[in-house]
Length: 315
Image: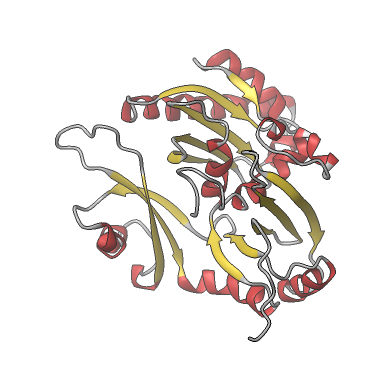
């Protein structure tokens, strides 16, 4: 090409649902705080390719570096022992360990890995890694409509990584931070330290399911979630003794507000509402001042944080 369009700063992220597409753009202007310049939701009209072709033209999306989140349920995040091989051989060495952990031939899988902070690993205990496993055809079905629309898709990412990117901005030096979010598919608890993902747990309760429960059922759900968090935090304390977990952040949306109060009463660490304004700038998006809107957009904003400086950058 004699004349190539200038690449725009930052990253554009896409989170695709059955009937909508969430788009976010984040850049780093140089003042140490990420700037959110786009955070919008659009209804899908026709196929995904048709919807994104229209949005590419209407919203001038050419020239952005694009990352797309893999839909929940189309990949697995597994924590496994790291085989004693060179980093360049890690992914291939893991395949034989994964064959009994997935319900499809591992030969047809796309596998990627993320290191888990180890500190001083106890003698006789293997270091651990996260393995991200997905069917190759599932990734292809997700990527090809975006590519055919003319968008320059560079990366397919997962929600756990996106949430880690946000959580890392709220860490205090030398400490870990937990973040609990809910969306229309499930809840997700992550714990990070030093910009790295240490723990990720899915909670099989969606935001809409919580909202539709009567008071008795919702209280029972809160009890189950609280027990799951207590167990997860105990697990973290046992396996990451070199890190002090100093607080749990919770997205403030709908029925989760009542859950926050219960967690505050039953967990041995402070529980606070997440407010993106504490770490992000978004002067031209006033709706992001609402913590409910922040909760809806958190995964997309986190996915667009790929250019962040520091240990979590460039992933």
